[in-house]
Amino acid sequence: MAATFDPAFLFDKPTFCDTYFHAFKIFFAHWQTFMGLGLLLILVAAVIWIIIGFAFFASFFMAISSTVLPGISSSDAPSNYVGRFLLDRVLGITGASHVLAPHASRLLNKITDTSNDTTNDGFYNYDDGFFGDDGGMGNTTSVNTTNITAVLLAILPFFFLAMVLSLAATATFTGSLIRATAEAYTGVSPEFRSSLRYGWNAKWRIICFEFLFFVGVFIAYLVIVVLPVVLTGSLIAFVLLAIAYVIIYVVMVSSMTGAVPSIVIENVSTTGAFKRSWDLCKSSTCEIFCKLVVFSFGFEVISSIIMTVVTSSDSTAGTIVGSIFSFLISGFHVVMTIALSVVIYMGMRIEKEELTQVSFNQEQSLPVPDNKVNDVEASNEPIAVKTGI
Image (cartoon, one colour):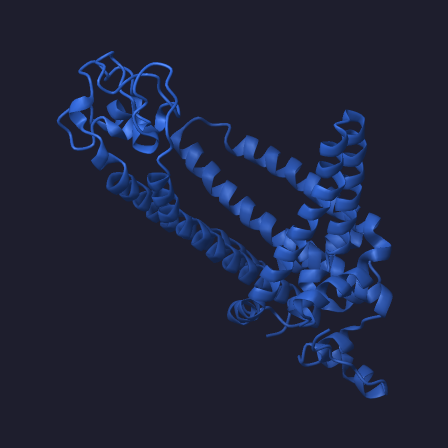
C-alpha cells in the first residue's frame, strides 16, 4: 500500500527541528498502526502483570498457610487483640474461631516481639511463625529459615516469569514500532502484522542488548561512584564523582540511541549493535542528548497541561475521561519516543553515510517508488545490504 505522503523529504539532511517534524509527520500519516501497536503494548503489559500478580499473591498466601500458620494455634490469641490489628478487621476475620484469625495481620507487625506466647498480656506475637517463640521479655529470637525459604521459593518464580514476559512483550513491540517507522521511510504504509513479525524476530537480541547495557551502566556506577566513596568516605568526592558519572551516563545513552534501531533495521547482532551505534552517534552525542531532553521536557509539560484540564472535574465522568486520556497519552508517549529514536538514527545515516531512499529501499528488500526508478537505473554503484556485524 502506498504511503499517504512522499517520504523523499525525509532523506534531506535534517536540522534540529526537522527531527521532531519528521517524527510527528510519520506518526500522523500512519497513526492507526502506531497507536494500535503502542496501546496494545500497554494492554499486554498490564494483563501480564495482573495475571502474574494474582498468581503471586495466591502462591504467597498458600505458602504462608502451609508453612507458617499450621505451627500457631489460634487459641493463643487473647480476646482483646481486635483493636490492634487493622487488617484482621478490614478482612472481617476478627473472630478467634475463624480459620485465619488472627494470623492475616501478622505481616503488619514488627519483625520481633518481646513477649512470651504463653503470657496473656493483650498482645499477640505475630512473628513467631518465622522467628520462633521469644520466650519472654527482651529475649532474642531464632530465625525460622525453613519457613522464610519456603515462602521465597514460592514467590520468586512468579517474579522472574513476570519480568521475562514483560521484557519479551516490550522488546517485541519496540521492534514492531521501529520497523513501522522504517517502512514509512521507504514510502510503504506500515502494516500491523508485518511490523509485529519483525519485532517478534528481533526480541531476544533487543533484550540481550538492553540487559548488557544495563549491566554496563550499573558497573560504571559502582566503579565510578560507590567504590571510591566507600574507600574514601569523602562527601566532596561523592559529589564530584556523581557529576562525572552523570556526564558519562549521558554519553552512554546518547551514543547508544541507534543500537536498537540498527538491530531491527540492519539486522545486526546484539554485540554488533554497540559498535554500529557508537560509529553513528559518537560525534553527535550532545546534539542527540539535547533532542531527547527537549522532547521529554516538552511532552511532560504539554501532557501535564492537558491532564490538568481534563481532570479538573471531580465528577465520575471526569474521572473516566481522565483515565482514558491518561491511557492514550501513555501510548502516544511510547510510540513517539521510539519513533524519535529511529528518526535520529536515520538522520545520522543520511548525514554521515549519504543514505538515499533508493539505497534504503533496496537494503530493506522493498520496491523502489515509481518516481525513483530512473535514479536506480542511472546508478552504477552496487547497494550493500547489511546482514550482520
